[in-house]
Amino acid sequence: MSFESASIKINNKDVSYADVLKIPDSALLKIEVYSKKEAMKIFGKEEGKNGVLLITLRKGEMFQYDIDKPCSHLLINNNGDTIYCEHLTTATLGGDTTNKNWTQFLIKHLNSNAPVDNGCPPGIYYVDFSFIVNKDGSVAEVKIFEDPGYGSGGEIKRLMKQSPLWTNALCENEPINCRQRERVTFLVSAGD
Image (cartoon, rainbow, N blue to C red; front, side):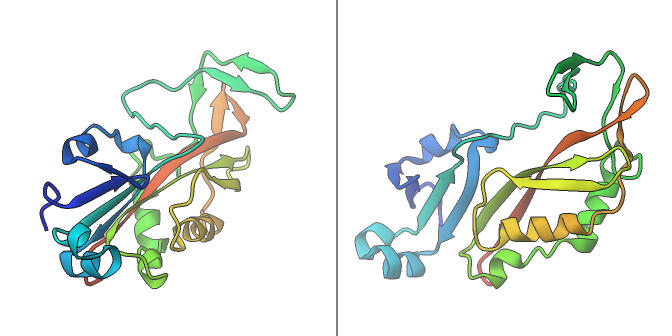
């Protein structure tokens, strides 16, 4: 299937392939890919003749991750006051600043087939979420910003219940609670 010739919809509005190329990754919630055969059954012969690409954009709170930008040094303390932290150290999994430990944790514990097990069509499903890393390194308050469905948000919540202790964040070398943000992408290909 060629995406350039497929029928494409963004949030149920017909668009061109050029429009798709303008969408920043951070705005994507999910991309569902329907082959010609599937598309003709679901959307009709005319609309589905070249396949269909359904794109859903995020609503509400957005997660924009840019590893090249420095962390903000403005924090909100337990009283709700904004404070400035000159020397801020972010929370890490096992003290690893390369994210290798995070990746290994995902490989070992994430059920990457969760969307398939819940009947999703082929596509890309993004789950942006946050959680609190407490001073003692435990994980609490997992928040899914927007769930693309098919069990993907539930899988993230299940995953984070298994999280090992993190190395807590520090402000002026004092342990603090912090909110960590992450993104997990589920890739589902035809025939999975």
